[in-house]
Image 1 (cartoon, one colour):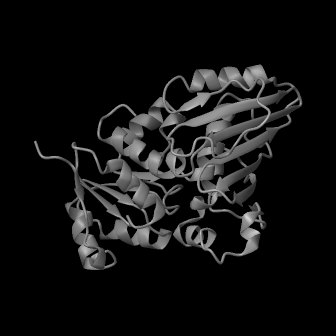
Image 2: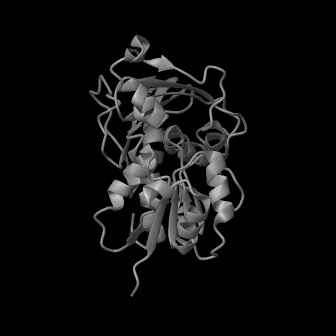
Length: 301
């Protein structure tokens, strides 16, 4: 039996490199590798895109859209790690923990849009509560999060790791100040919200790891009710409800290198804080892409 052929288009980028690391030792696939000097040659890329059974797109949005257009083989199955197709009709959202139905959609899909890093934490926290009726669809959801600098891409990594770097990089930096961020459309759509969530992300001076936080003020809802929803929703998989008792600090880099996600429920009554902790390069990017790939390959992931 022939092994499935896998091609990573854009493997020199941060996400592509991490996907390559995860696949490098596997004996159940054949990894197709384009010559470095031809990695931006459209004809060569098109050849690899169409000879592969599975393609990971680790590209800027516009280039990812072009790569899909170049893929004429109807049997080629694509996992797109860019933002380009996350709310696009005809693409299945790559977050299998949404539901058993979503898992099945991913399993048979030809086109999967990998979830965004911040969006993964937000959706893990908010989607089950909207589905259960605890968070109304028209609730004004607010979110703040912190990530290591690897989430900003290759150029930012080089800037942060430069010996001549700007001293301001030593402190946490708030961005998306205009309240426009590329993850907001998927956060709203996948959770079934009628309003775009307020979102305030922070980039800080460490390599990888992330915490996404959602504060709630719902007078008739207890923390125990929310924990019950999470326990019922996340019975299997990579997302786990943690015991928040006695937790005074939550380090954003504690799950660096992991493909799992931890969720916490702090407070009670009128002031509840929901937190999701994971690796922005793991469950927030390349780890999630490989998880979807394994599901599409027929494995339990």
